[in-house]
Image (tube, rainbow, N blue to C red; front, side):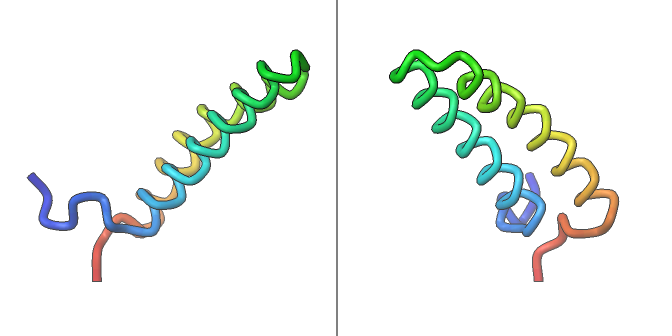
Length: 63
C-alpha cells in the first residue's frame, strides 16, 4: 500500500469533483430536474479523467 494514502492534490481534486457530481445529481433528482441530474452524472467521468491527467503530470506524490 502507498504511504500517502490518497493525500495528494490529484486525489483530493478527483474526490472533490466526484462528490460535487453526486451532490448535483442528488439535487437534480430531488427537484425533478433531469438536466441538472445529467450534469451531475457527467461530473463522474470528468473526475476520473482529471485524476488521470494530474497523475501523469506528477501531482500524485505526497510532500
